[in-house]
Length: 304
Ligand code: CP
Image 1 (cartoon, rainbow, N blue to C red):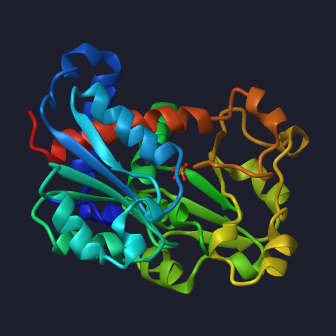
Image 2 (image 1 turned 30 degrees about the horizontal axis):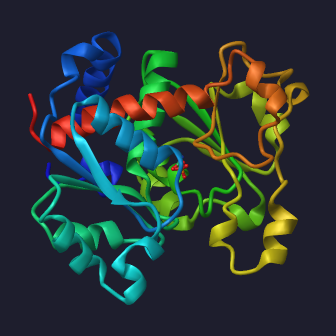
């Protein structure tokens, strides 16, 4: 494996190996403190980020490596019209590995064709966000101990939510998974994901607009933000943005061991009152994101 553009670039064995390394990093951080000494990570973020960029950077520092990069397209020569390929060929002269976020679907794939160093897709448009999925999988593993026999509710913007698309792809490879797809009609999961992933893998699923009625059957509730930046029309965003707001009263019929997840950032879709609920896992996901990215950097750099 030289680059990670899609979660399916990783086999289930490779994902399980990354999870195992991440768990070892959590237990024995000192063992890893100099593993990437003299290596450089470049973070090329053409779109805003807090968690993904900073967790990649924290991950590289905790491995003893260094970080270069930019956090917005207008801080780079992309603002002068430079292509993604030329940017990546240039950065490859300075860095050993690149994490890239771009608003255009497919840009990290194009980048991976322009260089021999590993490219990690840190989110491309509404398409994919494989390292968020790795953080989600590490969280599910640490909460549930397995990826099998789980009923997973995905709620909110299933159309533009790239983390949802990557997570469905990843979980569809495990047995006993069921999906409950909870969204307004306008934000339902794209047909290409439903047909090519869920139906193709014979995964049981239901489509509903009703979060409360779905609640009692869920082992995992994965809430998502309505993705304002992907809407063509502000009026549509305003009409749909508060379709689902999770509040403590809506959890009254939920399982005692439900895991409430969210890739963050949140806007209104989870009330801050839910943060005190021991079932809330979204800040655990943030921390797990750093550990799994450490494991991924080690693997892509071929560090033992
Ligand atoms: N989850 C996630 O991708 O967050 P950021 O946009 O802050 O990186």
